[in-house]
Image 1: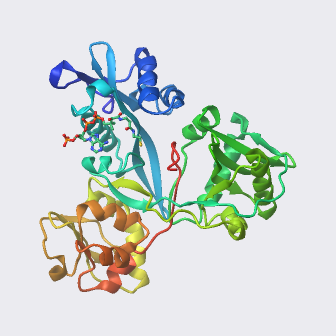
Image 2 (image 1 turned 90 degrees about the horizontal axis):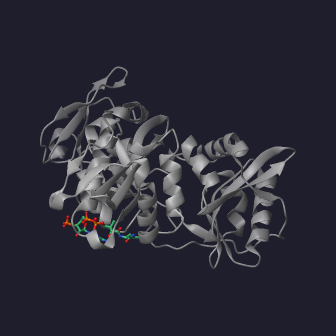
Image 3 (image 1 turned 135 degrees about the horizontal axis):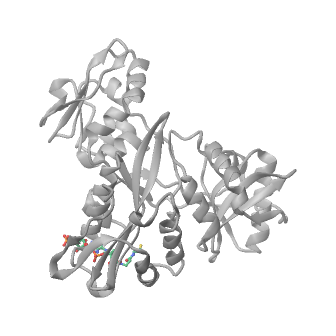
Length: 404
Ligand SMILES: CC(C)(COP(=O)(O)OP(=O)(O)OC[C@H]1O[C@@H](n2cnc3c(N)ncnc32)[C@H](O)[C@@H]1OP(=O)(O)O)[C@@H](O)C(=O)NCCC(=O)NCCS
């Protein structure tokens, strides 16, 4: 058996947690549709039938032959500057209403986190039910950019067409370019681009010019207004054509676009956009082993320490555990795990509560901002060094489900 396939696991009441099998597909789809959206059933089928993910991406809890709970772990990668971190994302979670409150999702989250750890993921990222996932080690860490109303729509124009599988390489290139300016980026893996082109919950539209795709956007089933998500464009003319095409699709409905300030459409449309909601919307992040994440980020941290001329050991404490990165001639040496360190300031270190590690390493506030919001995050005696090591970061995350 592969180390990541779900072993059969007996739960209280005779229920069994195990890997999803082709014979479960219809029941899993019906459960997801019942507890979520009808389109979730197809979203799930696309995942398990894709060779890049496969059946082992999903686990189910069964009561005899009846599927009563399910969750799926997707493989992601999160880029921080030039370091790519393997990550997991749990999606497509549901429990049969008659089986709620028995710890089935708790058991499925443990399965997902074990599987994620076994394949080497250094973190997990999620969107989902407010507060709920904090019960499983997640904390809000990275801002979701607001969807902003377009107050000056251009004249509507034809020209957009739904993307087809032939457009996948172009879509990947356009998204790479759109994300290039973000400090933290999570792309759509190739498999997910395939699912997005095939699924029903949103349509990926593309704009052609001289036989090439020059702009794209993902538009969920329109509601009272039309949401333009994940916009890309190669130049101002392409961005203008995309917006004119979306205006035609909207047929008089208001249009909102997801803010991508560092991307070409973000810049091209800036004068047309009103303010989005200022309610907090954030991605959840879980960092199971801060030391492993610090080690992976050592090249970035070494560069940042060097930029402020620091030549001293870096110490990061989550109070119950701590890690030292020794200063070397070439930057920072390999992470050395230490034990409990309640007062990291006395050791020339910084403190960060374990559930704030994701926010500190990937979030918009950095050490300076977080230490002004939370007493359990502080830079110790060398604020200049620890604020340089942990600066505020911009982020652009692409997910299967839109966080709107
Ligand atoms: C939310 C849902 C996945 C929970 O599944 P479940 O199998 O009942 O969850 P568990 O029994 O494993 O719950 C784990 C813990 O979370 C708590 N919990 C359950 N639902 C919760 C919720 N919505 N908010 C906060 N806590 C919740 C449980 O009390 C339990 O706490 P405990 O371990 O301290 O006893 C399930 O209710 C569901 O499918 N709901 C429909 C989908 C939905 O509501 N989606 C929201 C759309 S945004």
